[in-house]
Image (cartoon, rainbow, N blue to C red; front, top):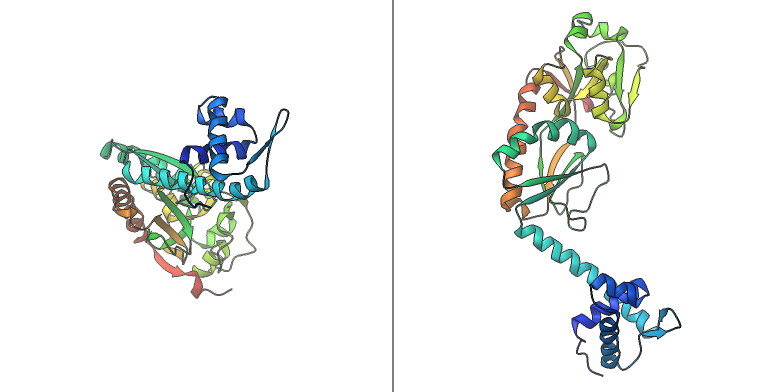
Amino acid sequence: MSDRLPPLTALRAFDAAARHMSFAKAAAELNVTPAALSFQIKSLEEHLGAPVFRRLNRAVELTDAGETLARGTTPAFADLLQAWRATQRVTDNSVLYVTSGPAFVAKWLAPRMYGFAQAHPETELRFAAGLKLMDLARDGIDVAIRFGRGDDAGLFSRSLGVEWLTPMMIPELAQRYETPEALRDAPLIIDDSITFLRPRADWAAWFRAAGVNAPEVSGVHFSQADHAIDAAVSGAGVVLARGTLAAFDLRAGRLVAPFRTAITTEAHFRFLCLPGHEERRAIEAFHAWVMEENKIVHALQGNHDLVPITALGG
């Protein structure tokens, strides 16, 4: 028996028919007539010397040989399609697919997008906001910006710097709560999106860092960091916010961070892409722009005394 493969068109026709279990649906997917698809299947069967489908009255089903072949063709064509899409991305700098958490998209990327668009009109950015850790190769993603300690093995990874948290509020509330001790009576806003961190980077940790004996912390809880920050911008209370996410509001004066004490965590935002792709023109430009914009965060960080949460205990 010869190992020579049948024509690719015949294998492609078989793969479509095996997935749909319908010659008509397979023909529609491949944009050919049912007769043409049937001819390709027959050609494959002649090449194999055995049928791969049983033709029933109004349906088809795989033979044992067909089932064996389908176990190989289905993943093979899926891999081929993935490789083709990846190759297209490597050669196409006109569109950049970026994924990040909803809070980073809303509070960091979206407010700054006009600047990137002005500087790089040749590149269209498309964002996928979500907490799911997407596979960059499989899911057609060019860049991911993720928060955490992270296992970035197998990826190009660059940190956006140390993450810091400090109380933030509108200027009017800052006049009312002028000391860390005064915050014991303030309406507190609690960001539950980082409760996974260990040690915990929360209000209790900040009060310890500030040397304040605070009662059990209570307040309004938000599951998303951007919602917690927006609540503070509205004047609803004081939020213990991450500097990276709140920098735009701080710079615009919508929020102030009046206290010197800030706590830091080992978790941080990272810029990720597939190895070698950092040299692609569009990704290189986007990476440089992100790092330049993030200098604002570092400048604001310099106004605070940073206390690692790992040094606080409790």
